[in-house]
Length: 598
Ligand code: UGB
Image (tube, rainbow, N blue to C red):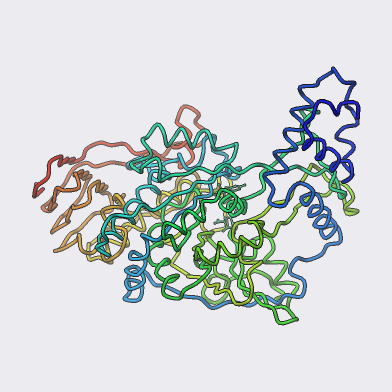
């Protein structure tokens, strides 16, 4: 009470609320007025921030925490009364007629899309010191994830404009959710690279705030161990993207600008945009309010399973069940073996890759009711079986894919399954953890993420008629991977299968030891025979035919040890580097028609 004069009326109200909510320990150690006054003010400023950044204010955070902690202590299963079963969804096969049809619809709709990248996580499992979006997706060109994503969005925008012959090219809005851990470095990456060609006004960053940590089952807020005038905080999870979009007012701006679809995606998936046009086509054709992208999933793989949950009272929903919950849920509901592969060699539950497409109208309507709050969970690590105290403080968390949990039964919630080779190769595990992944399961490492890009590009070109050499098996950082020719192209060269096919004609062949880098829009492969390295760069209004026989020593992969600190971290974590011995490189800087035929 003696310190009250230091605070504004709003802050005094907040302090009262804390006392009423059993948080007096936060003030007990406060000295007389005149001592540490600035720190006391900073403490209440922090409380005010925690209060305003939580959808229904701090008081409801404490209430929700008590409820969830009591459920957790009682061992209550969040899926009590629900029976899991395998849902049905749209299953697509890359390159067939159905796929091509959905891709075309998706490209038409792309001009009405907006993208949201959740990039607030530091990626503890990967242990990389920088931000994950700055990591090269592949090291043939060194293009980082953020550049790749931006170039994909720009290519989509352009392709949509061309296909619909619109009056002008509509800018696809791009929002990036950051956190205190990633915000400054993401801003810096964008600014120092001229936003990778996107207009700065097209990109918006929304920073998520951390939430208060909890010390015990009464939800007493934890003090920061390094500062007795601060509450300890931790990340609240990717689910924050919904409340941030809602509270920022961006959703209404988008609606007024004609946006119909919001596409959410994660920080390190170099394949994703190969699946986006078809998935968006499915959303538009089926008029889905929610469409989750999924891939075949190996049992116990660390990705959630898309599951149909049917309650004894008749309710049912199709929702992601997180990887650590799927096995116990199955065991408790008549599947004694839990999460196991079926006769296909995969789990019958499709794997959630956290790529969601939401229809904007129903999304705004729903968030109007919830304020963007997403169903939370708590995961305390208890000291012992009495579950009365924690090993370390915990906090509430939420996940963006839990958005459908509050939707009414009338909502159209679907999912689209794609081949994993075309849609999903995230970079999440460090080399040591990746090497421990059971044989046959994906490594989800920087190594596998890069080779998956070459594999997908090789398979796509094969399907388009190019003779691509068979891969060889090689071990990098203890991981056995398929090494295909290192083929990369700019998204504007080809985002859809139809577009890529239109750039390839005659009888072309690329050997396994080859590298091909296509850096321009109108580059056409015609009777090319490549055995070595070829790099072609052209401005948009140059048209280049590439053919003939290209043979040179090429670029070779050299093993590096991930423990060798003399090698940059972004290379070490993949276990190899590329030695560029010899290549044919051509740059076409002027408009016009050209032929490259050595
Ligand atoms: N992220 C944030 O933006 N803020 C946060 O507070 C936390 C994360 P992880 P996770 O696709 O493989 C998810 O840590 O949460 C961003 C799904 O829940 O890489 O373990 C972060 O920057 C799971 O169902 O993944 O698992 C990153 O971009 C499955 O689909 C993204 O959120 C799995 O991803 C994901 O964070 C998967």
